[in-house]
Image (tube, rainbow, N blue to C red; front, side, top):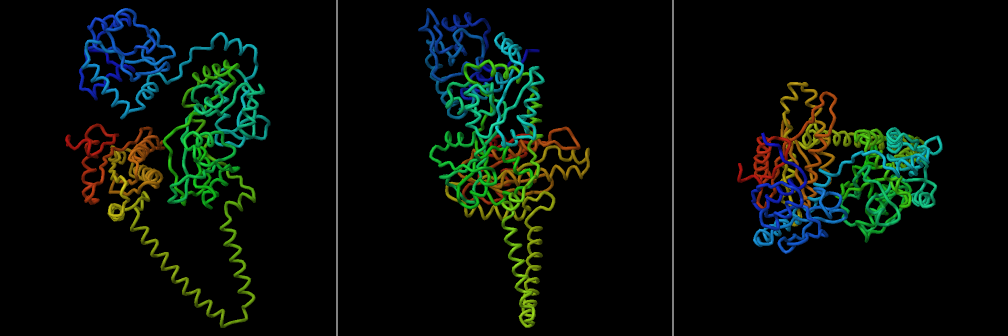
Length: 592
């Protein structure tokens, strides 16, 4: 049996063949041997030639394409000249047609898959590897009994103050404990109120390192610092009032180290307005003092954990992720390398658990916080109290009281009638088990949306079916099957609320109607639904529960029924080709 091929260059070649139709015959040897073979025309192409590498005699026998295959951090082999450089594919110079075809294919890859090199880098070279401490690292550790790391106060779930001085709470506390355990050194956490104070402490040598640092922007703005690789990755969430599309004024929390930097980098024309905490930012959006609020996803989830209701606002996940890392002064770079070495020995599950365990917020409101959270209720209660006082003052006016009673009786009947109508409407419009739209109401909504959509909108209908659902019911019981259905309903309501709506087709089948100007956002929504269900830990099983998905684009003149029929065909294509996948009808129509 032949050994299965794999690796960075091999996978790039296979992707390249999907743009050219090429078949390969592989030749093996040292770099020098393969370079000589290329110059002689014995091989057609060779990957991994450094842009600064001197090929020596016969240089006119080879040509390099201008599209990079990788960088210093993702070298596919230990090739001469590859350090601190980009590297490319070389072609035999006496094959100009081959060179032109390769050039065109790489151009298409750069246009259609611009993140390919970064994806392959992450897959094959992105994992930390512990090689032990170097001599300079050992020397530093030998002369220091404690590593002093500064962190931000009141920045949960990442870090917060505790009763004991200079001790972190939140994700930082768990992370520091893990690092101390693997490094064998005591880690002392020093809290600071603002990001400026934190950086000044690093600048003045009061601490050895700091966390968090926003890796990309931080390195650009503070050239005399160095950092570890990404310790945690978070996404940014955009919160706006319903229907708001402009973001001239954006709220940020004064305690956040990354929100303002992120906005400056991605929305340079936006005015930044600082507020002291999450609640004030939300209040500013609701009152129109700010058009939007940009916040880290983990911070948002932390604040939502105690029941904060943001259903009156639109929440959109932004595409760009942010990396948190440790940073140190450049002259103290060895500290970052020590932390990097220690991080390589920390199991990723420990970091994941640190995040998961600190996303729940304890409800410890003061009276002023209670008032700010419930101001509308306080006003209503005050109004009721004043009304009651007025009624007592005029109780001798029996005629007025009788009329008021009659009016109140009439209002009560009206309210009762409205409540019954609302309950009936709720039952008709929503699926009682999952909470998503019923099949009939979904079709009605879809038909109205197709007729009234904006000209630039892309409309899509998504059909999804829970994989092996009968087996779940048979093995774990129908009650647990209902648990899975309800969980998928929760995900669909949460994910599709901004750019669409969801319904239950019947049994374990669901559908989503997506609309908006950016199809990539719609694709992201579909992928996020699949990922969130797959990552859900159910109490009754350790297996990952997945969905198969079929999608179709809605065209002019389409009806919901026609679109569902096409999406259903794409769904069954996904079912019949391995499940746990998404297929567009337009991509598989020739295979049906």
